[in-house]
Structure formats: C-alpha cells, structure tokens
Amino acid sequence: MKNLWCWRCKMEVPMLDEEEYKIASKLYRNGFETGKCSMTRKKRFKDLLDYYKDLTGFEETNPNAIMHHRIELYGSACENCSKPYRTPKASFCAACGNKKDTSLINYSESLKKTAPKWWQKLLVLNRAD
Ligand SMILES: [Zn+2]
Ligand SMILES: [Zn+2]
Image (cartoon, rainbow, N blue to C red; front, side, top):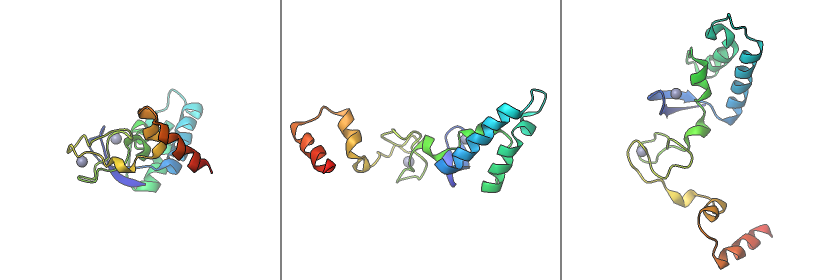
C-alpha cells in the first residue's frame, strides 16, 4: 500500500500493490457472486470495504473506487512532482510535463519498439548464456 495521486479521484489515495490487489479483486468477485440484487452496494461489498479500511485506514464506500486504486495501473511516480505517470507506458508526466527517465526502460521493451539492429542479436545471445 502506498499513498499516491489518483488521476480519476483527483486526490491522493491509498493504492494497493499487486499482492493486496489480488485479495481485493477476490473479495470484489465474491461480492458479485454471493451478493443479492436487493442488497445495497455497501452491504454487498462489505468484505472488500472492510479489507480496504483495515489495510489503509481509509473508509471507502465505493467498491469500484478501490478496484482502480492499484499501483500497477498508474505506473511509477514522477521524479519531479511525485504524482504517478498516469499509465505504466507514459513517456512524460501528465501533471507537470516532466519527461520520464527512459534510461530505466528495460532492454527487451525497447527492442520491441524499434527495428532490431544486427548487433542487438549479439546482446540477446549474450544474455541467454
Ligand atoms: Zn481513484
Ligand atoms: Zn510530474
């Protein structure tokens, strides 16, 4: 869990990491499977809301909001303003315009975008050793 700026809510909220999100999505599914139509959303997804509150101390009432509070969805935090880069693939910060530090992009990803050069094969072969 990490407090991050949410682009949809326009505020800082506790976001779940992948492990925490896995549990949340299970509770969310349970709400759909075991809940009844006559229940309010708050009742139906009580386990999920309780889980989120236990984890974050934040009393969320909208289960759908929790499901988009997932760190993975927004990518890493901007080096300049520390808001997340909106998507993991963003090349610059949507909040302050800071260009993302692309030196961190891993080799296999940059390989997909540009046509391979003859010497890149050598690098791949070396890595497989
Ligand atoms: Zn949000
Ligand atoms: Zn920024």
